Image (cartoon, rainbow over all chains, first blue to last red; front, side):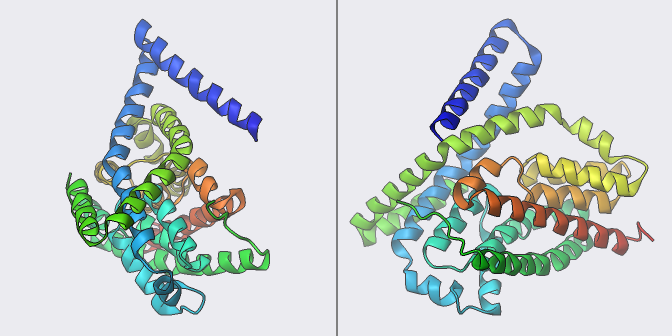
Length: 174
Length: 159
């Protein structure tokens, strides 16, 4: 594990060294990579700090019982409907959905619910879907949502069953 | 900008109700962010390299292939390994559509783009472990293929 960590640090170091040298000698591919890095970083900075603050607030304010009751072991169809509606309103895609899903799990949401959440956050975000409609047409979006949502739910249930049979536990935070 | 305003507003409301809890929330946020920061850095590095290897022009060239099924598979592979925000991906899809790329191919591209995270792998693994990450992404890939095929049928592109 430690060795793996060192390799990562060396890799990251070499990467930045490469960017700096490219900049100094005017190596175009290196400059292009640096621009991609910076533009994606600025995109992340626009979303991530807010996402993590909101996750922090969620962890302090939302009671475990509430999540357990609506999204926990006993939940049925309603749980999936709630979580898909919730996913529809959250911005940021997978990168934000993953830490949110993790918090939900630690608050007692069942596995199939959090996997549905991750899938739904990827495909049913409302602002994104509106954008999609304006470029590709409403028929395209409707077909996509009607086919993908049931498949996301089914695959999440399947994944939960598989993991439960293996006694899987997500690593809890220390 | 709106996101920040909203977050600050919510933070303020929380602060008015309970100072202690709000500070605790900030602490949690910082701790979580620190924990995932190395994985984010790795991801950003992957993103920059992959976007360099697959610029928009390359993507359009691959997706405009004559064989629809082959294009669909290429589209789903490209969608899986690249990452781009919706406000870049959909205008690009709109342009490709105008160039004659089929709905089926665009569906494979956008759906894998959103659901399959080859680049987010380091982050996802950090939260859920390797096995779950691999299974979830493979399943998402097949869901995207099914969605694309159904889209193809609906738009009369297959039969």
